[in-house]
Length: 183
Image (cartoon, rainbow, N blue to C red; front, side, top):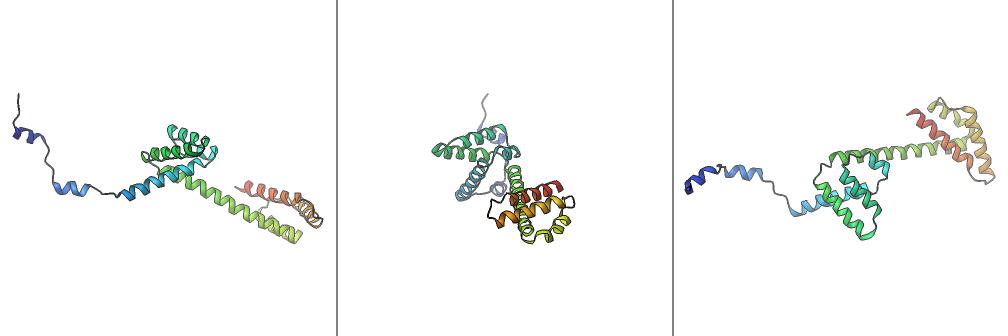
């Protein structure tokens, strides 16, 4: 059974040339390289995270294993493993990973901001003494006034005697516990 050339032509679906041109999106080599580099940077960011932070990211087993291995490798092997991670990311949807990373960064930034506020409050307590205690009680009603006043007095004595700032640190710890208790 042989087919004529005309019969072969009938088997090929007819397409409109204009439709093909509209569907093709041209991407420059530079853009492809920028995208690949961005994915490699994302991989490097994940490699720098700790185990607990990595557990919070939506990673499949292969990618997680590659990241864990990269964290153990040094020098040239690490660079090559980073390239592999970047290549693995090209075939995955990275949007959920980026979203989870942003949440981790934001949580870290919020914690740093809270610590700065608590440090300023602690400094104010040590400088102003008992006059600043009502401010803390307004912020944290569950705070123990007597414990706070004792820590402030001890911190002021330590500062005057040029002793190590043990109570100064304890004030910060106490304020931090109060702030975390509110969340």
